[in-house]
Structure formats: C-alpha cells, structure tokens
Image (cartoon, rainbow, N blue to C red):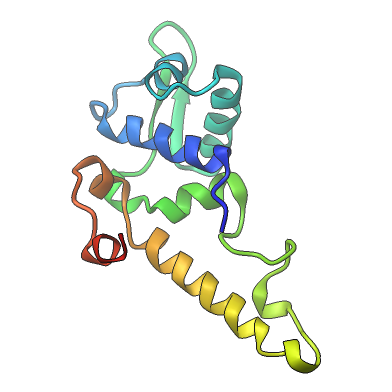
Length: 143
C-alpha cells in the first residue's frame, strides 16, 4: 500500500487541529507552516475535510479551522477516506468485486487480507491517541 502525500498531509493537518485548543480556530497558513505543507495543497485538503464533516471553518480575521468531531472519535481511516476514498483497492476496484481465473484465483484472498489489515491498523488509531503519543498495542507490536 502506498500512502499519498495528500493522505499524509491530511492526517498531519488533523493532528495539528487535534492538538490545538478546543473550539479555537487555527488558520490554514499556521497548519501549513507547522507541517511544512504547501499552502495551495493545504487549502484543498482542508476543503475536502470540511466537506466530509471532519472540520468546521470560519472566514475572516478570527476565522480558521477546528475539528468538527472530538479527536477520540476520529480514526486515521476516516481522514484517509475523506481525501482519498476507499482504503485499499486494486486498480481502483473493490477487492470483493475482483475475479481471477485459473492459477490466479486465490489472489483475491490476498487482496482481501491486505484490505482487512490496512483497515485494522487505520481504524484502530484515533487522532487523540496520536496526539497523546499513546498508540494502541497492536500498532506498537507491528512496528
């Protein structure tokens, strides 16, 4: 599995928001600067996160972004899905829909297992756990 720059940037932006004071907007520029993310890219990512209900935004001098959901309820998988779509696809297709012939037939099971494991890790870690540096035992064991 490849984690795109977009997914990485989105998760990092959400971590900045989770670490900020609750209900205090953080400027997009501050997020981009804190994580050395190009501002144009950051604006697009924050827009997608807002459209997917993960952040709120307010325009103006007192504006910025803040989490729409408490950090303990936001999973890394939620963020990745918001900006990239499904977690694991094969050629853009859901592994459930794939069909292989002959000797390659068991390959579908490999792709399904991959998706299950990716989901297990990314759905098992919340923003709050990352911010608190309290990752689940499962993740610590894998690393």
